[in-house]
Length: 235
Image (cartoon, rainbow, N blue to C red):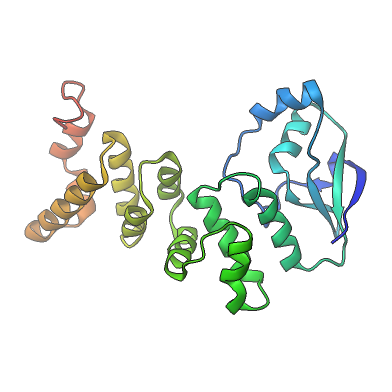
């Protein structure tokens, strides 16, 4: 696919269309100073939309240029006849082939591929070419991240939750899963300790015939969790 380099008005670019966004990093502060000092070395990739342009890659670079009050930006334009699948490949390749993707970014990439790949049987081959996981079981688990709550996804990104635990919490109702994620974040628990607490809360809830959320919300539990007199191990 051939790209066309073009000076483009920043006002014509729609940053709210996140169809092809892969990166999970929202802040562009780290790029702002670099662009101010040395310019935009790696132009974002766009495709013509009905009114303006859709971003395929370069969301943070475009945001940084906006902060610098740039009115025009140098961009690479994908041919307007490019298919959504081709656009997805550009978006994923621009990210996956330049840096390691975190779990949520891998999930976004695989979901985008799965949605637009014309031949589902080729998904693992295309994933391999883009440096993404190819094991079907792993792919299914990663794609399940898309169904998790923002709270659980945030704790995956922070390193509080492993993929396995995040998917376990995703099986609970929304409020309960989020409450466990917040508890594990506050207490900075290992995976084994997380599993132990999950099991204990489940057993207590069954014994007392209450919900797991009720156990977590109990005054004794919440009081210990918020106490300034107890260290993390005591809590």
